Structures are given as C-alpha cells and as structure tokens.
Image 1 (cartoon, helix red, strand yellow):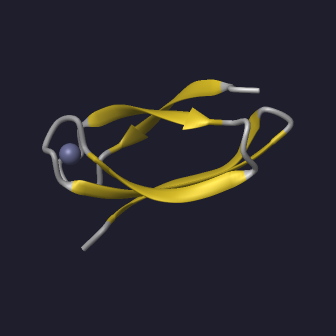
Image 2 (cartoon, rainbow, N blue to C red):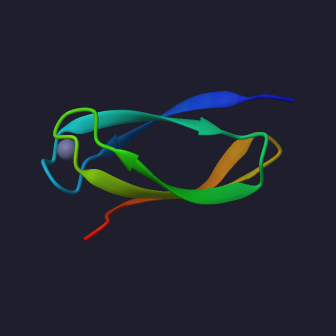
Image 3 (cartoon, protein in one colour):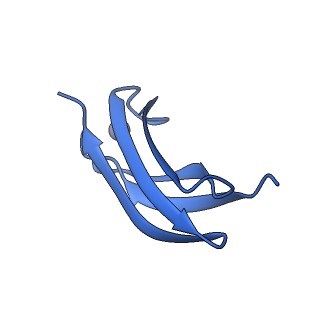
Length: 62
Ligand SMILES: [Zn+2]
C-alpha cells in the first residue's frame, strides 16, 4: 500500500512554510531532503501507525 500524505512544516534554515510528502505505508523513517525554498538539507523524521502520523520532526542537518 502506498499512502502519501502532505505534512506542513517550517524550514529550520529559512523559516518558510513547506510541505513534505510522507509515505505512511511504512512505520517511520528518517531521511535528508533539501528544502524546496532555500535548498538546504533537512533531516526529516517521522513515525506512523495505521496510516496516521504519530511523530514528526524537521531539523537542520548541520
Ligand atoms: Zn528553507
């Protein structure tokens, strides 16, 4: 099952609101994604259960 949900977040580099696409078919993961506004790397971490987000954080990678 592929279940992609848009999650609103704030970039820790430029403080612009961004939307990240999370795959809720997995129980959680952590990965690096570039901010769509300032292109700096973000560490995206989340956990999910039954297709719902149970934990979510975005951190600066440096
Ligand atoms: Zn940014």
